[in-house]
Length: 363
Image (tube, rainbow, N blue to C red; front, side, top):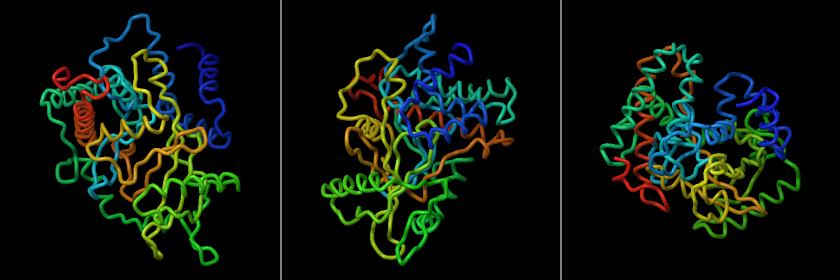
């Protein structure tokens, strides 16, 4: 991997050009734990894996999320109105060997083991459960899904918790009334101030985007701020946009408008890949084919030279957190088995598409 100075230089090169304020937040978060560092440096993992003198067995090609780890699974509301537990981050997604995709999740388990109060033997047992569930789900050959009725353990608790949330609750927690107008709360945790030029640009581009939608007035912009969320993507352009929504005092909606960057995994893979119109088109297309049901209002939009992923911030958006699993080995075992199945189902669901292996090669 290299010396500390070499690693620091690689991280700085990768993040060059990002917005200084949010990049500083990223570096601060990465210093909090080995797992946080792992989350924020997917590029190091893939660069080092690709440069190994002893190559990892490739396995069949699959559509991969490209950044599998313990905290890249969560809940969201599909475009059919139901809540699901599934993969929830596709920034690094691309076509890759199945073994590469699974290897990052397994590595994340060992990095996270101290935070979960796991011994080496317990981490080994946990990963055996994960791999057995993954293999069994592939062998079944059917792409299933997890919703509240079929969930168990921590996943069921998560889906039960988010089912009680409403859009009005989310809006009221992230906005305030100021001079008879609703405005986004600038708290430094979820949102940061925006420049006038950024506000004008985002507003104009969303207005153009709205013209192609069934209800253009839903997307009428009321306020804009820079959004703080995630870890690996901190420093890229990202906005939270308050829009009219369905109208009325509690009918407004919040949109996430996020710049899509090239996949770190795709940079080191030599596999021929589709020619996407933009990085945002890549993210949205792969997300739609890997998830059982895509989130509501998921779109790709070109703003200037960059592609942006647009989706609605939902009250049901949440993820499993390591702190939820600490000390509860029964819930942790149930969760990793669910994760193994979700990965297998996503690979089966997206099989036979633009270069990925057919289901028969995965079973």
